[in-house]
Image 1 (cartoon, rainbow, N blue to C red):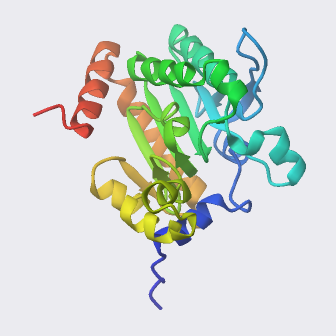
Image 2 (tube, rainbow, N blue to C red):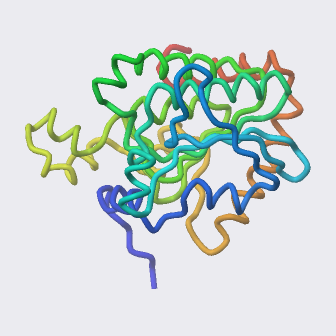
Length: 261
């Protein structure tokens, strides 16, 4: 029997499901000897971002990801995956450290967007996101970003300006939530399903448009597939000189924004 094709909004609901693997599940399944590193060295530790050093098939790597909760208590602790400025500053600190010690950076993205509170804005939210994007785009080490659930707004892009961007089959990647899009366009958040179709946010659509590089099927062999893909890409990217990595990354994103001819 043919597999039923899901609507865009059904994909959104799947991407938000609390039953999806968490960032710690991916770290446990894919990496060895993970050591978490905390704090931004300026203000505090934002628990909505987890990051640290790990081993992947004998390769030292830096892993950074958004963390959501599965229970009400966890959601409050991790602020529903909405990161504050100090979380992005922590991510930037770990990326700089990775570059210093020549470690590839792997990011796992699952966020409804950066935290929009007044305290976050007053603490430099937009600047922290912009700095993270600028830093990641200029890193002289290989970078791979994997969108595992929601990838919304600058909160996602701050960890997704990578050499390779992959998406899980039922993940979504967009400029903002469908509800936010519908509210702005039609003043009606209930039209989110229609907005999802207009926005082109599914993995297949984004792959077709060239905005992501690979789609990872969600099946029993998902972790095996991710493991194989990561190993292949890290070996390939590891052969490229650091200066060439930056140049290739620049050209990649210039092509996306239409700036290259």
